[in-house]
Length: 367
Image (cartoon, rainbow, N blue to C red; front, top):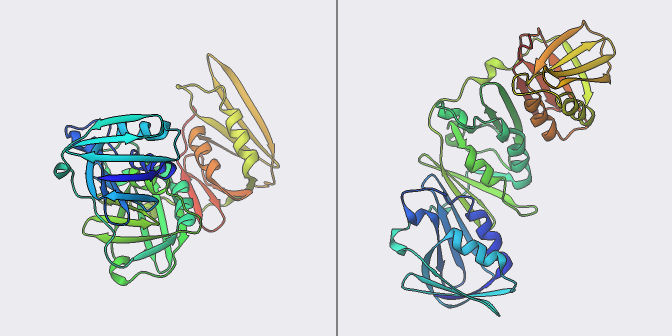
């Protein structure tokens, strides 16, 4: 194999691919990327056996077709630190040589036959959605997935499709985020019937894709999702299990409703939480006529109090929340104002932004 690469394009591709490569694995070949030079382009692949990525590079000059499998953690920094616009790569018999104007690297690889296959995007798209819309939904839900849980279904994001609407839902048992997106067209009945739970890692990977005005094409094959955006194909196993009946925990009967400025609320929550500790991780929100007072304290640190003027004329209510969970949601709300709905102090709080985003947050007991 002999190929000249545009260094910047190769470095960008490796930046995405290395996020899939496992740092620890009993199979050394999985710590590698596979580079296959064809007639007109080069395909670079990475996989951890759960998630896979194929990247097609066309900004190349191919002098000799071939393939090589090389460790990602050796190749990526060599390309990243290069000062050349064009990188020459030559590979044969498991050895990869990389040349720049003033540099020469030799990297020893693995046998290409040992590298597992990574799915391509074959066939017509079953779901199509604008990349910016997809990534907006990912930003507003991914943070609420469970980081480690024996209930595997909540380690991913639920995709629920109704006509041209795609809904993302994520929960870790203490909070729930729901975002509604609009598809390019309504999928067929077969797709509408499927329960799709996409792993958090895969959602994070889709969130890293780039391309202004791009549309993401999606296919569901067996128990896998395959998504294509431009020259990138992301494939992943779906999460098995039953997602919680999230509709049951979204409050619909609250009578205390008010509108708050998003940025001011984010600032107030951050400041009220500055003196909280591991043992007192909550802040108290006290709503009275025309005023919201946020307080936080820790016995060994002190007390914090932040006052906000608000338009509220309902009965007084005090409720405690985890400030980190509040900051998480306030950071991803794109509207200048948000709506908050409350019931009794022992019932969840409901935060809404327009008609397409809501967040349910369980209260905490501040004693």
